[in-house]
Length: 161
Image (cartoon, rainbow, N blue to C red):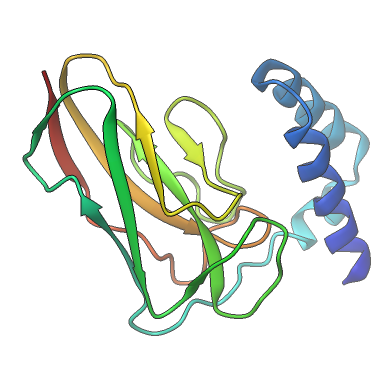
């Protein structure tokens, strides 16, 4: 178990230190150089708490907003901690923009549609292009992997002026 945690901690640290392009290259290289059994064995999902939920405090579903858009995240039944902090019944927020849920048995991607809040943040301000957008929250564990069962908000729709 310690080897699996060490492997994933190293990969996350390496990816955090890179730009998105460098992170993709580093992740591909790590997967090529790491035995498949070791990678797959380490992707065990952390249990969530029955009834735990994440939700948007602001904006409301159907809101018309302007940039910068203030987004406040809510959570019940679990705690928000920084990425890498392996506390029971905890995780950190990920904001999904104009996309569905990612693969639930892998770390949540880090790109323009999957914004990580590994610093433990519970709010943000973002700019989006004018038009309609969807937003969803997904809680990730200390390794950015969704819990079992996943703790995800309802999808909300906003219109940016």
